[in-house]
Amino acid sequence: MQAVESKQNLQIQKWVVSVSVILLIIKFIAYYFTSSVSILTDALESIVNVIAGFIGLYSLYISSLPRDINHPYGHGKAEFLSAAIEGTMIGIAGTVILYKAIYKLMIPSQIERLDLGIILISITAVINYGVGTYCVIKGKKNHSVALETSGKHLQTDTYSTLGVILGLTLLYFTKLFWIDSIVAIILGGFIVYVAYTIIRKSVAGIMDEADSQLLQSMIEKVNSRRRENWVDIHNLRVIKYGSVLHVDCHLTVPWYFTVNEAHEEMEILTKLNKEKFGESLELFVHLDGCTEFQCPICTKSNCAYRKSPFEKRIEWTLENVVQNEKHNTPKGENG
Image 1: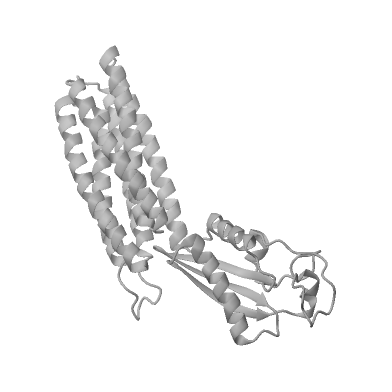
Image 2: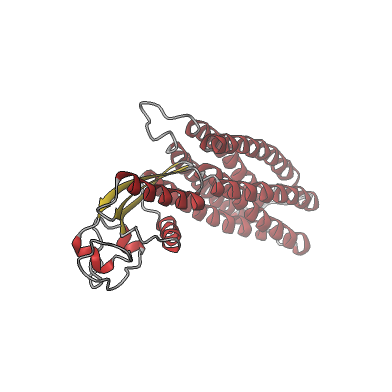
């Protein structure tokens, strides 16, 4: 399943690169006829998208390679490196756009054939948004940061193109040429901000920063189907390697369970999480046997070895599940 997703991601990225090249050509044709700095802004961003697309394509190829002796967890981290490079390039493009726009504002020039320019870049906006949305949906489904990033690039390109269309339309009717530069300045600032968010996310992936949203979603899923044989879960951690999620945790089960019984509980927990996150999830479970001090929180009804009565069930939360301690008393919730 994982190999199928990787190949699918790679094929989609090939189409993204091809479409980006075609749209880039259309935008430069529009700039040639109009001499509009806001259209030039859009075209410069597209250059970055084309280069970033090729980088993303290469990273998806690397991440799709099977594990080897030197990369036992696979090559998925290449996607985060790709996203970091793409974000940096977008930031540079945004800075250049700001410079060009401010220069053109100070030294304005004549703009021509606005009707043709508006038509051409409107076509690119429709195509960009459609392809970008498809990439984001597939990237999230296949847990591909590189594919999702490429889709967001195309969507960002669409938003900036819509701004250009609006600005050129106002310019067409008002003949106020400074509008062209103002639109470009606004878009340049927006592009720099998008670059920051992409770099921030990629650095978090490279540094294995905890994904609180993903962990919370996982905890909610486990809580919804919690079994009485699961006395507690703690030390929950998630690491992303491209489209693969490596999850490990400690699961406490009754101490008197046989190896087969304990393994069955582990398999149920694994299946439950794969229902939510797909076959790309790898769950490594360390099994612990319960202790006497956990009897007050244990919900198992037919335990022949209970030492003290049940008092209160502890709800698993992001705060207590990620801790490296067994849950015990209802008062402190952690021992």
